[in-house]
Length: 391
Picture 1 (cartoon, one colour):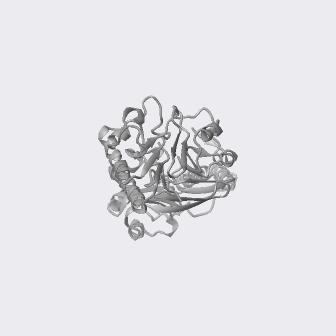
Picture 2 (picture 1 turned 180 degrees about the vertical axis):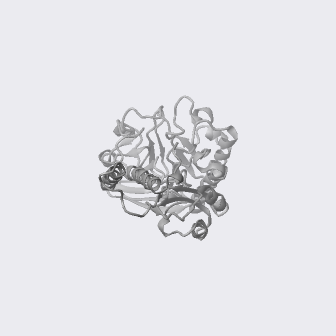
Picture 3 (picture 1 turned 90 degrees about the vertical axis):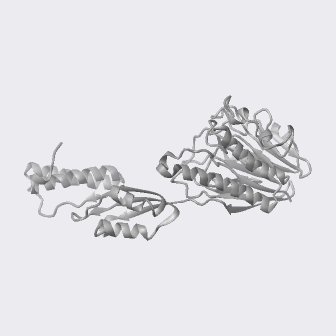
């Protein structure tokens, strides 16, 4: 039974503007995850490695970075493991494509025509490995945004390279009603089901996801190492085993962990905090050199609570791989009776209370927070005008 290793969205050379001073470290972590994926393919002695687009974060990469990636691909070739890759949307096959500028096959020390490393292109969309009876078909266009579905005319591509096992590669989004309805590359469940593929190796989504449409098993491997702070489903590659018959194919999928960096979003209700020191102690209890922690402060803060998020960030810098804290909490309203309803202050106060209730009912948290802050300032101004500075 043919065995594959499926990865995608490695994004070598990503700038990581959202990670600040640890961006360079994360780039190294991404390369290390790519190298561990190659290790996994070698250890498992897979037949083919599939790279489903965005091996590079952009087409503008220095030669030394491309040579470094080619060195990893050479490790596979040295062990007679074939690699098939397709350009993605970041390293798309446009006139400036990295795959036009550099000859990965030659950089990996392979002769022209070798089937140990193949980049599928619009003019060469398929490769057949006769000894494995496996055909790999990649839908690639010469622009980032594909003018039509990648399955348009796919029956001709499939017929042009027959084999017992048909494997597809696409870098794009599966259309999901109400969730994913537009993208640079878009296709449907119905198209997947009608494709005639046994396995569809997908790239573009950075979190692992899998499913089945008709007789086709499809999967997004996710990014081997997270690329942005909201990608908590990244960090693995997929080991694929093909079996059964063309009429009754079987596909098994096994995730393999290769990434190190993890991201966690943490909401902290400030109503339960007595001081900034208490918050720092709570956060330090979560210290982890592989964790990027994104903290959001919410709730109603007591008047006595004095928080400086810049200070907290400086104190947490050595406790995590990355740390961010955002304060969306609101100050408590001053206590005391409301001004009489027949006064201007009373009218404003009750109007703001009505607006807050309406915003809460509508789920408009930002609007409700603005009205609460306006009401708080109004109450404080009425209580002690010297405590409020108007600008």
